[in-house]
View 1: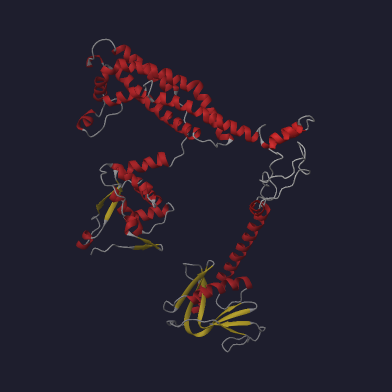
View 2: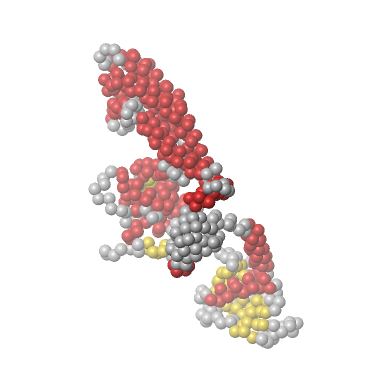
Length: 553
């Protein structure tokens, strides 16, 4: 009691500190559910939540592990259970005891739970899949939706602006206009938010390439000439209409709820009214269309802020690839130096080649003239630090990397050729029977599997090892001599028969036929490979063999 459990999963130790949820002191709402997205094991939590969110029934640990394996994520059942405990602690998963298959009282007391995603966990998982994990794409801003909102708001302001607010003046046409206003606003707001995010992502980058800079330029040109102007004028008209309708916000919200088919559930608190069914929705709409701080106004300001970034990227690309590149400047300098009157002065002003300082040294001669040549000028010793650590070699842009496509293709071809030869050798070993002569490649593949089996501990009469996709099982019979036959060498196995097969499968029928009529006994002794040079052995007839190397196990 009181000791922390530590589990070993896939060779790693799962410590209690890894499974404990992060501290959420003072957090009583659903904010702590988001915590599983930022943990070091977030990929495993997300995969488990995908399974739970996509299932319509509660799942057991074994069912969750099987669903994960189907999707390519292999987790041990104990690790899945620990991850589910962590998700349960943060409120992303709920569970219930499954007693439907209980046959004994002990099964009722055992931990026999079925898990499902909680409502907060489903919201967080959908938010991750739809917003965080998706690629942000800029949608076209629907100006038609803006026009529809403005026209319906102005119609409502014209119809309801005169007189005191009265619920009797709200007819079916007014309710249809309210529904159209909020439906169109949802479409407009979603497109504007996506375009704003794409604009910010491009405008905040100084090192955009030519394609992305052209994208930014296209966004700015298109939006600045059409969308921003439409948003400014439409927002001003909508804001004016909402000022007239502000005394009607409460009555319009109540009328929208009364016209709903789920008004009884909304009144009971089981459901929330759709947009337009609360006075807060109308206040939010008025704030959205505010001419100074609304969404449209903020979008126009971000357009203005993006202009310097676009110009900076265009200037950078022009200077690095256009007429103002380093090469073009050097050519312009060379042409200017050719001027016979002031060519030397231009060169000195451009490169800073002054007679009184070279290589951080002071010249002793003062009577060399105003413009001495570089070769004929005064000589100064190069400082020691510059000689020892100074840059050497050619200057300027480095050479292009060597094209090693042909070498890579040659290496890939050689690798594929070796793999094909290895597969042929494995097929020859698997098709053979114990004691059958093998070619050199097949015999070496069989020897590697045989040595792997010899190094393993015995499990009753058998030792099994795997190497290079081939498994070998040494069966201890106590009599006879097994043999691995190669053209120039062989391995003798007194009292044992080697059976070659694929990993995880039984030997072939022909190989098992070699064990017919033999008895197997436990094999507790370790194996050793002893080399011999004689071609003869008392148990095997080798009169037709040439002298070769042998090994006895």
